[in-house]
Length: 428
Image (cartoon, rainbow, N blue to C red; front, side, top):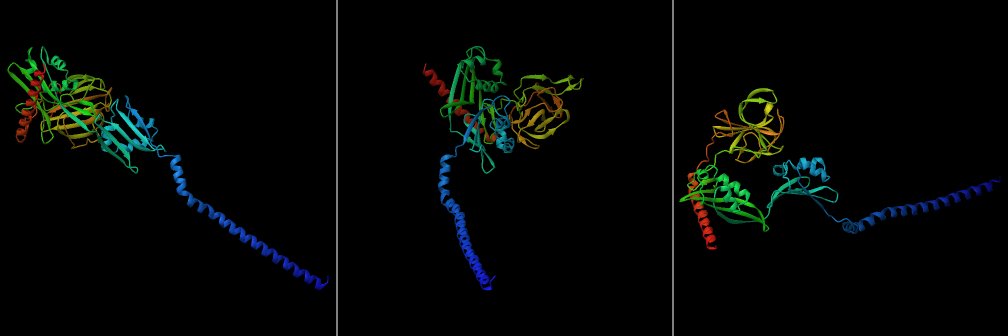
Protein backbone atom coordinates (compact mmCIF):
# COMPACT_ATOMS: atom_id res chain seq x y z
CA UNK A 1 0.00 0.00 0.00
CA UNK A 2 1.11 3.57 -0.71
CA UNK A 3 2.57 5.10 2.48
CA UNK A 4 0.79 8.41 1.91
CA UNK A 5 -2.58 6.64 1.45
CA UNK A 6 -2.07 4.55 4.57
CA UNK A 7 -1.31 7.71 6.60
CA UNK A 8 -4.46 9.40 5.31
CA UNK A 9 -6.58 6.41 6.27
CA UNK A 10 -4.99 6.39 9.70
CA UNK A 11 -5.93 10.03 10.33
CA UNK A 12 -9.43 9.36 9.03
CA UNK A 13 -9.87 6.54 11.54
CA UNK A 14 -8.70 8.82 14.36
CA UNK A 15 -11.21 11.48 13.33
CA UNK A 16 -14.05 8.94 13.16
CA UNK A 17 -13.18 7.48 16.58
CA UNK A 18 -12.89 10.95 18.11
CA UNK A 19 -16.25 11.93 16.64
CA UNK A 20 -17.90 8.82 18.00
CA UNK A 21 -16.41 9.55 21.41
CA UNK A 22 -17.82 13.06 21.42
CA UNK A 23 -21.24 11.79 20.35
CA UNK A 24 -21.26 9.00 22.97
CA UNK A 25 -20.08 11.42 25.67
CA UNK A 26 -22.83 13.86 24.77
CA UNK A 27 -25.55 11.22 24.97
CA UNK A 28 -24.13 9.73 28.19
CA UNK A 29 -24.10 13.16 29.85
CA UNK A 30 -27.68 13.93 28.84
CA UNK A 31 -28.83 10.44 29.84
CA UNK A 32 -27.21 10.81 33.27
CA UNK A 33 -28.89 14.18 33.79
CA UNK A 34 -32.20 12.71 32.73
CA UNK A 35 -31.83 9.82 35.20
CA UNK A 36 -30.86 12.26 37.93
CA UNK A 37 -33.93 14.35 37.22
CA UNK A 38 -36.12 11.25 37.19
CA UNK A 39 -34.73 10.14 40.54
CA UNK A 40 -35.41 13.51 42.10
CA UNK A 41 -38.98 13.71 40.85
CA UNK A 42 -40.49 11.18 43.29
CA UNK A 43 -38.90 13.01 46.24
CA UNK A 44 -40.30 16.36 45.10
CA UNK A 45 -43.64 14.76 44.38
CA UNK A 46 -43.71 12.95 47.74
CA UNK A 47 -42.91 16.06 49.73
CA UNK A 48 -45.66 18.02 48.06
CA UNK A 49 -48.19 15.16 48.26
CA UNK A 50 -47.68 14.14 51.92
CA UNK A 51 -50.24 16.51 53.51
CA UNK A 52 -52.74 15.81 50.75
CA UNK A 53 -52.37 12.03 51.10
CA UNK A 54 -52.64 12.38 54.88
CA UNK A 55 -55.98 14.15 54.52
CA UNK A 56 -57.18 11.57 52.00
CA UNK A 57 -56.13 8.72 54.32
CA UNK A 58 -57.99 10.37 57.20
CA UNK A 59 -61.15 10.56 55.08
CA UNK A 60 -60.89 7.02 53.70
CA UNK A 61 -59.97 5.29 57.00
CA UNK A 62 -61.44 7.36 59.87
CA UNK A 63 -60.19 6.62 63.40
CA UNK A 64 -63.31 4.75 64.61
CA UNK A 65 -63.06 2.53 67.69
CA UNK A 66 -65.23 -0.53 68.17
CA UNK A 67 -66.96 -1.29 71.49
CA UNK A 68 -68.26 -4.75 72.43
CA UNK A 69 -70.65 -5.18 75.36
CA UNK A 70 -70.45 -8.58 77.07
CA UNK A 71 -72.83 -9.79 79.79
CA UNK A 72 -71.22 -11.84 82.56
CA UNK A 73 -72.53 -15.42 82.66
CA UNK A 74 -71.95 -18.27 85.08
CA UNK A 75 -68.34 -19.44 84.83
CA UNK A 76 -67.07 -16.34 83.03
CA UNK A 77 -63.67 -14.96 83.98
CA UNK A 78 -61.71 -12.11 82.44
CA UNK A 79 -59.61 -14.55 80.39
CA UNK A 80 -62.64 -16.11 78.67
CA UNK A 81 -64.18 -12.71 77.95
CA UNK A 82 -60.96 -11.43 76.39
CA UNK A 83 -60.77 -14.61 74.30
CA UNK A 84 -64.32 -14.01 73.04
CA UNK A 85 -63.33 -10.44 72.21
CA UNK A 86 -60.29 -11.69 70.25
CA UNK A 87 -57.69 -10.10 72.55
CA UNK A 88 -54.32 -11.68 73.45
CA UNK A 89 -54.04 -13.92 76.52
CA UNK A 90 -51.28 -11.85 78.10
CA UNK A 91 -53.43 -8.71 78.20
CA UNK A 92 -55.77 -9.72 81.03
CA UNK A 93 -52.77 -10.84 83.11
CA UNK A 94 -51.18 -7.39 82.78
CA UNK A 95 -54.46 -5.64 83.62
CA UNK A 96 -54.98 -7.68 86.81
CA UNK A 97 -51.59 -6.51 88.11
CA UNK A 98 -53.44 -3.35 89.15
CA UNK A 99 -54.85 -3.82 92.67
CA UNK A 100 -57.94 -1.78 91.84
CA UNK A 101 -58.60 -3.82 88.68
CA UNK A 102 -58.08 -7.11 90.51
CA UNK A 103 -60.48 -6.07 93.27
CA UNK A 104 -63.42 -5.99 90.85
CA UNK A 105 -62.35 -8.11 87.86
CA UNK A 106 -60.88 -11.10 89.69
CA UNK A 107 -64.40 -12.35 90.51
CA UNK A 108 -66.97 -10.98 88.08
CA UNK A 109 -70.62 -10.66 89.11
CA UNK A 110 -73.14 -12.63 87.03
CA UNK A 111 -75.45 -10.32 85.07
CA UNK A 112 -73.09 -7.34 85.15
CA UNK A 113 -71.77 -5.93 81.87
CA UNK A 114 -68.23 -5.50 80.54
CA UNK A 115 -67.55 -3.11 77.66
CA UNK A 116 -64.32 -3.64 75.70
CA UNK A 117 -63.16 -0.98 73.22
CA UNK A 118 -60.58 -1.68 70.50
CA UNK A 119 -59.14 0.47 67.70
CA UNK A 120 -59.16 -0.17 63.94
CA UNK A 121 -56.10 -2.43 64.33
CA UNK A 122 -58.07 -4.45 66.91
CA UNK A 123 -55.77 -3.33 69.71
CA UNK A 124 -57.06 -2.80 73.24
CA UNK A 125 -58.09 0.78 74.06
CA UNK A 126 -60.19 0.54 77.23
CA UNK A 127 -62.72 -1.48 79.20
CA UNK A 128 -65.55 -0.48 81.50
CA UNK A 129 -67.11 -2.81 84.08
CA UNK A 130 -70.37 -1.96 85.85
CA UNK A 131 -69.85 -2.42 89.60
CA UNK A 132 -73.35 -1.21 90.42
CA UNK A 133 -75.80 1.38 89.15
CA UNK A 134 -73.75 4.26 90.55
CA UNK A 135 -70.18 3.07 89.95
CA UNK A 136 -68.13 1.56 87.17
CA UNK A 137 -64.48 0.56 86.79
CA UNK A 138 -62.68 2.00 83.77
CA UNK A 139 -59.27 0.81 82.56
CA UNK A 140 -57.44 2.65 79.78
CA UNK A 141 -54.29 1.86 77.84
CA UNK A 142 -51.90 4.79 78.18
CA UNK A 143 -48.73 3.88 76.26
CA UNK A 144 -48.96 0.19 77.28
CA UNK A 145 -49.58 1.21 80.89
CA UNK A 146 -53.03 0.24 82.16
CA UNK A 147 -54.62 2.92 84.35
CA UNK A 148 -57.66 1.98 86.48
CA UNK A 149 -60.20 4.44 87.88
CA UNK A 150 -63.63 4.32 89.50
CA UNK A 151 -66.25 6.42 87.72
CA UNK A 152 -68.92 7.65 90.13
CA UNK A 153 -72.27 8.76 88.76
CA UNK A 154 -74.17 11.54 90.57
CA UNK A 155 -76.40 10.01 93.24
CA UNK A 156 -79.44 11.39 95.05
CA UNK A 157 -80.26 10.23 98.58
CA UNK A 158 -83.77 10.33 100.04
CA UNK A 159 -85.12 9.58 103.50
CA UNK A 160 -88.03 7.12 103.60
CA UNK A 161 -90.42 6.01 106.33
CA UNK A 162 -92.40 2.76 106.75
CA UNK A 163 -94.70 1.66 109.54
CA UNK A 164 -97.26 -1.03 110.27
CA UNK A 165 -99.18 -2.73 113.06
CA UNK A 166 -97.86 -6.07 114.28
CA UNK A 167 -100.54 -8.78 114.38
CA UNK A 168 -98.56 -11.97 115.00
CA UNK A 169 -94.89 -11.65 113.93
CA UNK A 170 -92.18 -9.21 112.92
CA UNK A 171 -92.07 -10.78 109.44
CA UNK A 172 -95.79 -10.12 108.97
CA UNK A 173 -95.28 -6.49 109.97
CA UNK A 174 -92.35 -6.11 107.55
CA UNK A 175 -94.47 -7.46 104.70
CA UNK A 176 -97.43 -5.27 105.65
CA UNK A 177 -95.15 -2.21 105.62
CA UNK A 178 -93.87 -3.26 102.17
CA UNK A 179 -90.33 -3.09 103.42
CA UNK A 180 -87.80 -4.12 100.70
CA UNK A 181 -86.23 -7.54 101.24
CA UNK A 182 -82.73 -6.12 101.86
CA UNK A 183 -84.12 -3.93 104.60
CA UNK A 184 -86.01 -6.85 106.14
CA UNK A 185 -82.67 -8.64 106.53
CA UNK A 186 -81.17 -5.53 108.12
CA UNK A 187 -84.09 -5.16 110.52
CA UNK A 188 -83.93 -8.81 111.57
CA UNK A 189 -80.21 -8.40 112.25
CA UNK A 190 -80.76 -5.22 114.27
CA UNK A 191 -83.23 -6.92 116.63
CA UNK A 192 -81.75 -10.45 116.50
CA UNK A 193 -80.34 -10.23 120.03
CA UNK A 194 -83.20 -8.24 121.56
CA UNK A 195 -85.69 -9.86 123.91
CA UNK A 196 -88.50 -7.91 122.19
CA UNK A 197 -88.55 -10.56 119.43
CA UNK A 198 -89.94 -13.04 121.97
CA UNK A 199 -92.33 -10.54 123.59
CA UNK A 200 -94.19 -9.20 120.53
CA UNK A 201 -97.95 -8.88 121.06
CA UNK A 202 -100.81 -8.16 118.62
CA UNK A 203 -101.26 -4.40 118.33
CA UNK A 204 -97.57 -3.52 118.74
CA UNK A 205 -96.15 -0.99 116.25
CA UNK A 206 -93.16 -1.15 113.90
CA UNK A 207 -91.58 2.04 112.52
CA UNK A 208 -88.55 2.17 110.23
CA UNK A 209 -86.54 5.10 108.85
CA UNK A 210 -84.11 4.40 105.99
CA UNK A 211 -82.30 5.90 103.01
CA UNK A 212 -82.90 5.19 99.33
CA UNK A 213 -80.46 6.06 96.53
CA UNK A 214 -81.23 7.14 92.96
CA UNK A 215 -78.98 7.50 89.90
CA UNK A 216 -80.44 9.47 86.98
CA UNK A 217 -83.87 9.14 88.62
CA UNK A 218 -83.49 5.36 88.60
CA UNK A 219 -83.63 3.60 91.96
CA UNK A 220 -80.25 2.10 92.74
CA UNK A 221 -80.95 0.12 95.89
CA UNK A 222 -82.34 0.59 99.37
CA UNK A 223 -79.69 2.07 101.59
CA UNK A 224 -79.28 1.38 105.27
CA UNK A 225 -81.87 1.54 107.99
CA UNK A 226 -80.83 4.52 110.12
CA UNK A 227 -83.37 3.99 112.92
CA UNK A 228 -86.05 1.46 113.87
CA UNK A 229 -88.51 1.23 116.73
CA UNK A 230 -90.87 -1.43 118.06
CA UNK A 231 -93.47 -0.09 120.48
CA UNK A 232 -94.64 -2.77 122.90
CA UNK A 233 -97.35 -1.27 125.07
CA UNK A 234 -95.61 1.60 126.84
CA UNK A 235 -92.12 0.30 126.12
CA UNK A 236 -90.04 1.53 123.19
CA UNK A 237 -87.27 -0.66 121.76
CA UNK A 238 -85.06 1.55 119.63
CA UNK A 239 -82.03 0.69 117.49
CA UNK A 240 -79.87 3.22 115.61
CA UNK A 241 -77.19 2.85 112.95
CA UNK A 242 -74.21 5.05 113.74
CA UNK A 243 -70.89 5.67 111.97
CA UNK A 244 -68.25 7.14 114.26
CA UNK A 245 -65.61 9.64 113.06
CA UNK A 246 -63.13 6.73 112.93
CA UNK A 247 -65.40 5.12 110.24
CA UNK A 248 -66.55 2.29 112.51
CA UNK A 249 -70.22 1.53 111.84
CA UNK A 250 -72.59 -0.48 114.00
CA UNK A 251 -76.11 -0.87 115.39
CA UNK A 252 -76.69 0.48 118.88
CA UNK A 253 -79.45 0.76 121.41
CA UNK A 254 -80.67 4.27 122.15
CA UNK A 255 -78.44 4.32 125.25
CA UNK A 256 -75.31 3.65 123.16
CA UNK A 257 -74.88 -0.07 123.94
CA UNK A 258 -74.02 -2.42 121.08
CA UNK A 259 -76.78 -4.72 119.84
CA UNK A 260 -74.77 -7.22 117.78
CA UNK A 261 -72.16 -9.84 118.58
CA UNK A 262 -68.60 -8.72 118.00
CA UNK A 263 -68.10 -11.48 115.41
CA UNK A 264 -70.13 -12.89 112.53
CA UNK A 265 -71.06 -16.50 113.16
CA UNK A 266 -71.04 -17.55 109.48
CA UNK A 267 -68.44 -16.05 107.08
CA UNK A 268 -70.11 -16.74 103.70
CA UNK A 269 -73.30 -17.47 101.78
CA UNK A 270 -73.33 -21.27 101.73
CA UNK A 271 -75.47 -24.01 100.16
CA UNK A 272 -75.46 -26.41 103.09
CA UNK A 273 -73.40 -27.55 106.06
CA UNK A 274 -71.36 -30.53 104.87
CA UNK A 275 -69.86 -31.44 108.23
CA UNK A 276 -70.36 -30.06 111.73
CA UNK A 277 -68.09 -29.64 114.74
CA UNK A 278 -67.61 -33.19 116.05
CA UNK A 279 -65.01 -34.93 118.23
CA UNK A 280 -65.84 -38.36 116.70
CA UNK A 281 -66.35 -37.75 113.00
CA UNK A 282 -65.49 -40.30 110.28
CA UNK A 283 -62.95 -38.70 107.94
CA UNK A 284 -63.87 -39.47 104.27
CA UNK A 285 -60.28 -38.86 103.12
CA UNK A 286 -58.32 -40.72 105.81
CA UNK A 287 -61.08 -43.32 106.38
CA UNK A 288 -60.88 -43.21 110.16
CA UNK A 289 -62.58 -41.62 113.16
CA UNK A 290 -60.95 -38.39 114.27
CA UNK A 291 -62.05 -34.98 115.64
CA UNK A 292 -63.43 -32.44 113.18
CA UNK A 293 -62.78 -29.19 115.05
CA UNK A 294 -64.64 -26.85 112.75
CA UNK A 295 -67.60 -26.55 110.37
CA UNK A 296 -67.55 -27.34 106.63
CA UNK A 297 -69.74 -24.99 104.58
CA UNK A 298 -70.44 -26.35 101.08
CA UNK A 299 -70.50 -23.57 98.48
CA UNK A 300 -69.66 -23.05 94.78
CA UNK A 301 -66.06 -22.44 93.75
CA UNK A 302 -65.15 -18.78 94.05
CA UNK A 303 -67.79 -17.86 96.65
CA UNK A 304 -66.44 -14.87 98.64
CA UNK A 305 -65.33 -15.58 102.22
CA UNK A 306 -65.51 -12.76 104.79
CA UNK A 307 -63.62 -11.86 107.94
CA UNK A 308 -65.88 -12.45 110.95
CA UNK A 309 -64.51 -9.43 112.80
CA UNK A 310 -61.88 -6.70 112.89
CA UNK A 311 -58.51 -8.41 113.17
CA UNK A 312 -55.01 -9.07 111.83
CA UNK A 313 -53.88 -11.80 109.42
CA UNK A 314 -51.30 -13.94 111.25
CA UNK A 315 -50.99 -16.69 108.61
CA UNK A 316 -51.51 -16.61 104.85
CA UNK A 317 -50.24 -19.64 102.93
CA UNK A 318 -50.45 -23.42 102.54
CA UNK A 319 -50.92 -25.85 105.41
CA UNK A 320 -50.71 -29.56 104.51
CA UNK A 321 -54.17 -31.09 104.08
CA UNK A 322 -55.87 -27.73 104.59
CA UNK A 323 -54.52 -26.33 101.31
CA UNK A 324 -54.66 -22.53 101.13
CA UNK A 325 -55.24 -21.25 104.65
CA UNK A 326 -55.88 -17.92 106.35
CA UNK A 327 -55.68 -17.42 110.11
CA UNK A 328 -56.96 -14.14 111.55
CA UNK A 329 -56.40 -13.01 115.13
CA UNK A 330 -58.98 -10.85 116.93
CA UNK A 331 -57.41 -9.29 120.00
CA UNK A 332 -55.84 -11.63 122.55
CA UNK A 333 -58.62 -14.22 122.89
CA UNK A 334 -60.10 -15.27 119.53
CA UNK A 335 -58.67 -16.62 116.27
CA UNK A 336 -60.41 -17.99 113.18
CA UNK A 337 -59.11 -20.36 110.49
CA UNK A 338 -60.33 -20.46 106.87
CA UNK A 339 -59.15 -23.51 104.89
CA UNK A 340 -59.29 -25.08 101.37
CA UNK A 341 -59.48 -21.60 99.79
CA UNK A 342 -59.21 -21.32 96.02
CA UNK A 343 -57.12 -18.19 96.54
CA UNK A 344 -56.78 -15.18 98.80
CA UNK A 345 -58.22 -11.72 98.13
CA UNK A 346 -55.80 -9.58 96.13
CA UNK A 347 -54.64 -7.47 99.11
CA UNK A 348 -54.37 -10.17 101.79
CA UNK A 349 -50.95 -10.95 103.26
CA UNK A 350 -49.36 -11.56 106.65
CA UNK A 351 -49.89 -8.72 109.17
CA UNK A 352 -52.68 -7.22 107.03
CA UNK A 353 -55.51 -5.63 109.05
CA UNK A 354 -59.00 -6.72 108.01
CA UNK A 355 -62.45 -5.39 108.85
CA UNK A 356 -65.59 -7.27 109.82
CA UNK A 357 -67.40 -8.42 106.66
CA UNK A 358 -64.42 -7.75 104.35
CA UNK A 359 -63.74 -10.30 101.60
CA UNK A 360 -60.49 -12.10 102.43
CA UNK A 361 -60.60 -15.18 100.16
CA UNK A 362 -62.68 -17.44 97.94
CA UNK A 363 -64.08 -20.94 98.37
CA UNK A 364 -61.99 -23.65 96.72
CA UNK A 365 -60.93 -27.28 97.09
CA UNK A 366 -57.20 -27.06 97.74
CA UNK A 367 -55.64 -29.63 100.06
CA UNK A 368 -57.41 -32.85 101.05
CA UNK A 369 -61.03 -32.41 100.03
CA UNK A 370 -63.81 -34.18 98.14
CA UNK A 371 -65.41 -30.99 96.79
CA UNK A 372 -65.48 -27.20 97.05
CA UNK A 373 -66.18 -25.99 100.59
CA UNK A 374 -64.87 -23.79 103.38
CA UNK A 375 -63.51 -25.42 106.52
CA UNK A 376 -64.07 -22.79 109.21
CA UNK A 377 -62.70 -23.05 112.74
CA UNK A 378 -62.74 -20.73 115.76
CA UNK A 379 -60.29 -20.83 118.66
CA UNK A 380 -60.84 -19.23 122.06
CA UNK A 381 -57.68 -18.91 124.16
CA UNK A 382 -56.08 -21.49 121.85
CA UNK A 383 -58.86 -24.09 122.23
CA UNK A 384 -61.15 -25.02 119.31
CA UNK A 385 -64.82 -24.14 119.94
CA UNK A 386 -67.97 -24.76 117.91
CA UNK A 387 -68.46 -21.70 115.65
CA UNK A 388 -72.23 -22.28 115.54
CA UNK A 389 -72.80 -22.30 119.30
CA UNK A 390 -70.01 -20.28 120.95
CA UNK A 391 -71.24 -17.18 122.79
CA UNK A 392 -69.40 -14.27 121.22
CA UNK A 393 -69.05 -10.99 123.15
CA UNK A 394 -71.17 -8.03 122.03
CA UNK A 395 -69.86 -4.98 120.25
CA UNK A 396 -68.39 -2.38 122.53
CA UNK A 397 -70.62 0.58 123.47
CA UNK A 398 -70.17 3.98 121.83
CA UNK A 399 -66.76 5.35 122.94
CA UNK A 400 -66.96 8.25 125.36
CA UNK A 401 -65.52 10.77 122.89
CA UNK A 402 -68.32 9.99 120.37
CA UNK A 403 -71.29 9.77 122.73
CA UNK A 404 -72.35 13.40 122.32
CA UNK A 405 -72.45 13.03 118.51
CA UNK A 406 -74.30 9.71 118.86
CA UNK A 407 -77.06 11.12 121.10
CA UNK A 408 -77.50 14.15 118.81
CA UNK A 409 -77.91 11.84 115.82
CA UNK A 410 -80.29 9.54 117.72
CA UNK A 411 -82.52 12.46 118.79
CA UNK A 412 -82.56 13.73 115.20
CA UNK A 413 -83.63 10.39 113.69
CA UNK A 414 -86.43 9.73 116.14
CA UNK A 415 -87.70 13.30 115.80
CA UNK A 416 -87.85 12.70 112.03
CA UNK A 417 -89.66 9.42 112.64
CA UNK A 418 -92.29 11.12 114.80
CA UNK A 419 -92.86 13.81 112.15
CA UNK A 420 -93.39 11.16 109.46
CA UNK A 421 -95.81 9.22 111.67
CA UNK A 422 -97.86 12.36 112.44
CA UNK A 423 -98.01 13.23 108.74
CA UNK A 424 -99.16 9.70 107.92
CA UNK A 425 -101.92 9.81 110.54
CA UNK A 426 -103.02 13.26 109.36
CA UNK A 427 -103.36 12.04 105.77
CA UNK A 428 -105.88 9.35 106.73
